[in-house]
Structures are given as C-alpha cells and as structure tokens.
Amino acid sequence: MNAEDIRTVLVVGAGTMGGQIALQCAIHGLDVHLYDVSAAALESGMARVGGYARHLIAEGRADAAVLQRLTPTTDLAAAAAAADLVSESVPEDPALKGQVFAALHTLCPPQTIFTTNTSTLLPSMFAAASGRPERLVALHFHLPVWDANVADVMAHPGTSADVVETVTAFARRIGQIPIVAGRESSGYVFNAMLSALIDAALRLVAGGVAEVADVDRAWMGVMKMPIGPFGIIDAVGLDTVWKITDFWAGATGDPQSRANADLVRGYIDRGRLGHKSGGGFYDYPDPAFQRDGFMDYEGR
Amino acid sequence: MNAEDIRTVLVVGAGTMGGQIALQCAIHGLDVHLYDVSAAALESGMARVGGYARHLIAEGRADAAVLQRLTPTTDLAAAAAAADLVSESVPEDPALKGQVFAALHTLCPPQTIFTTNTSTLLPSMFAAASGRPERLVALHFHLPVWDANVADVMAHPGTSADVVETVTAFARRIGQIPIVAGRESSGYVFNAMLSALIDAALRLVAGGVAEVADVDRAWMGVMKMPIGPFGIIDAVGLDTVWKITDFWAGATGDPQSRANADLVRGYIDRGRLGHKSGGGFYDYPDPAFQRDGFMDYEGR
Image (cartoon, rainbow over the protein chains, first blue to last red):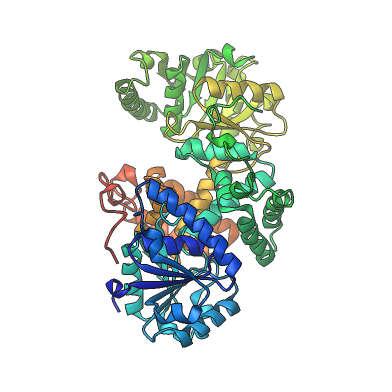
C-alpha cells in the first residue's frame, strides 16, 4: 500500500492527542473515524476538536467542511473494517496497547497499517501482541499537531521497510515533517531534547541556583525565543512532566532527579497543572513572561 | 561604590570574549582598557573588535567614536591604576586566574571590583588568591555579547552583598539582562541548559537514533527556531564543545558521554571546527539548515 492509497483513518483514543491527530488527518482530506471506548470521553474529545476546528477555520487553515470528514464512533468493528491506517493514542500501558491492537487485528482488513502515537514506550513492546508486527510502526506527533508539525517515524526491528516508507510519505501528506529514527529509542528525537532541557531547568530551580523567572529570562534572552522552559512546562502540563520526572527519579535513584519531581509535585498538589488549569509556574491568561518589561525587570 | 561610579573598565584577556566585553562597555559610554600579556594576541583581538565595531556602527547600534573609548594596552600597571572594575577573560585555569588577580590586587586601587568571566570554574576557586575575595564576583557573558545580552552574576560565599548589587546594576548599565545566581554552580544558568540540550542532541546522533540534519529539523520544526542544536554547536565552535564533552566523559566514565566527545572529535580531526573554520556539522557560508526546503526535505 502506498501513502496515496490511504483514504480512511481510524484514530483510537479521543484524548487531546487523538483528537488533534484526527483533525489533522481531516484537514488534509482524509475520512477519519475517531473512536473511544468511553462515550463520555468521545463527547468531550469531540467538543475539544470542534473548538480547534472553529479556530483553524477562522484562520483559513481548515476548510469549513472539515468536521464532516471526522466521525466520532463507539462502534470499533465498523470503523476498523473501513480503516486503511490506524493511529493509536490510548493510555501508556504496553499490555493495554497490545490488547487494543490484537482486537483491531481481528477487525481490520489484512493490509491496514497500525501506527502507535506512544510517547514513552517502544513499538517492540507490543509488536507481537498486535498480530501484525510487520505492519506496526510508531508515528508520533507533537502538540499542537498543526503547528508543531514534526512526526517521528520509528520502526521496531520487525517492521517492514515498505510500511516505514508508506508511513513516512503519509506523514508528509498530512503536513508533517517526518523524522525517521535509525533505531528504537524511548523519547524519540525532539522529546529526548526537550526532556533534557526541562530536566536542566528543574535542576537549576530545585537546586537553588536560579528562580523560575530567571531561568526563563536567561533562555529567552540568549535564544531570542518568546517562551522559556517553565513556560513550556506550563504548556505541556505539569502532570505530564511529573510523570516523566517521577519515572526517571525512580529509575535512576538520583536524589537530584527526585528533587526535580518533587518541585513539580508541589505545584500539582496546589492544583497548578499549567496553562490548562489557569496556573502552573505562571498564572494564565497573561503570564508574566509575556508581559512588557519581563526581560528588563528590576527584580531581586 | 555604586554602578554609576564605574567610569573606567579594565578587560584582561583579548580573546573573543574579552574583546566583545570591552566593546560592549565602550558602546555604553565607559572608558575601556583592553589588556593582553601578548602583543600579538592584543593586535589580533583589536582587529576582531574593529570588525565588530564597524558592523555595529553600520547598524546604528554603536556611535562612530566608540573605538576612541577603547584603548589596547600591554601596560597592566597603568591600566590597573585607572580601573574601577576589572573583567577577567584569561584561559580557564584556576591557578592562572588566581595569579592574574593577585597581580591586579597590588596594582588596582583598593575599591576596584574584580569580575571573572569564567565559563566553567567557580569564583571560590581563586577568591583567596585574588587578595580581595569580598570584591570578587563572576560576571559572565554570552556570545555575541550585544545580541545574547544575558549576564550571569554569581557570587562566592565571601563576596559582599554590596558588590553583587553594584555588579548587577552595572550589568544593566551595559545593556545586559542580569541573572543573579542563588549560589555557586558550574555552568551558570543558560549554559547549564544549553549543555543539556547539546548533550541530548549528540547522544541521538552518536547512538544512531537520528542524523544531524534530522535532529535540527525536529528542534526547529517544533520550536519554530531558525537554528537547531548542531547549528548552535557550529556557532559555539566544536573545539569548545569538545572540551566540555571530553571533561564530562572523563568525569563520569559514562561510555555514552565518551561517544558524544568522540563524535565531536572526529569532526575536529578533519579540521571542521564550526562556522569559524568554514565547516563543522554544516558547511559555511550558506549552511543547509538556512536553505529553502530544509524543513520539507524529501531525504532519506
């Protein structure tokens, strides 16, 4: 199967990522089914997608009929039967992903390509369980999918070269810059670098070297970027960053990594999850780092 | 002494950093002496400074008389006697820095403030040797000083609070955003983050996960920056990055850190030091990452 033969996409999991992937495919003319096991999750996911769509239509970046190509469904069998390509965004549990793909394997036509949007796992962890390891590959997106338009393509050792090629071309077709990994590696390419940057920023604050605003000021001042690491953490979500920092603190036993995780946890425990909760390291809307004078503060 | 009482600055060491610091002070109206122990180094340093000055004057960012306020000298005694503040940029050897400050201590008035631009050492390593530890503080710049206008202010435990305050205000006076460190920490604030990012980028390539151009593409595509980590390494200089990676490989014994250092070393051994040598990870001028089509390449 070539990328241009892909007409119908099934996105499994209607969370933030699944919804954005589904919309991105619809923007690029594909017929999309968005499935979730929970009708409530599907409803709230579609509400989010509707909001994104209105915004992108208003900006002229999506056509007015985009949502007519995106069908929410809780009928997996029907959606699977029609799918040329599956994009999976269910929770980060290798056993769960294996079960989902095994079910899809019985429901999809034999040529359907399976892609996983896993952020932290490796496709080889559930390749055998999928029933069609040679047609399974990671196709991993970044948020927001239409702006941060980079997609990792990461095969496991059993993925066929044809599938890698088709999925790489498919990524381009839906407006993504494909980054093809040379081998399986947790964290892919961009996320590996972002994690390192966030880890260094947290160390500076947890270790008493610098305050949050000074860390961002230093980054923004040298890099001439409109946002620094703590602004980025607020956008990613402190809950997500905590999961990663907590995992590494446990895996390495490094006290400094634990201090990083604890720093994030302290904000979460006060309900500060970042942009989405109205506050994280900064308050939203109108965070300090976007205000005039932030860079030439008279502070301290 | 307050920051506005600083009229005359002595910059010790006419390398790239010393020359840029001297020029930045002159741009902001100070009388500057630029000293180097080597007349040849001073001459080539002043040639570089002249080039920067012409460029900044042409851009309207420096007045035509800026170089009249910047005097090269090999007479340390005379320049020291006139100095309100010293900025030291000699090679990164704590014994050498201690000797230089000890000599300056005998030559400068008692109220002269000593600042070090060390990138990797801590002021406490040569505070006692300086003869005036309470008036010694790090004031650390980033290249190019007029664009990457962030300066770390880092005291050692014996620095007086008045000196920190004066030097922080002085940094603002010469157009820098001061980042005051809460404690001594090798690598300061921005450099600690940049090192982590560069380390992660090198790991991806040395470990076979991604190619150089793909690493930069991923960073540029998500961050919407005009340069990625390998473009940044080319700008910093592979020799400088190698010194840091080699130091960490030795200090940690981590084989992956050694692989990072070896990756950089391989380029250096072929004469590829980065932008300044006409080539590093990219060829200059007109590096691939600045060309149209780099982001939507059809590569691999």
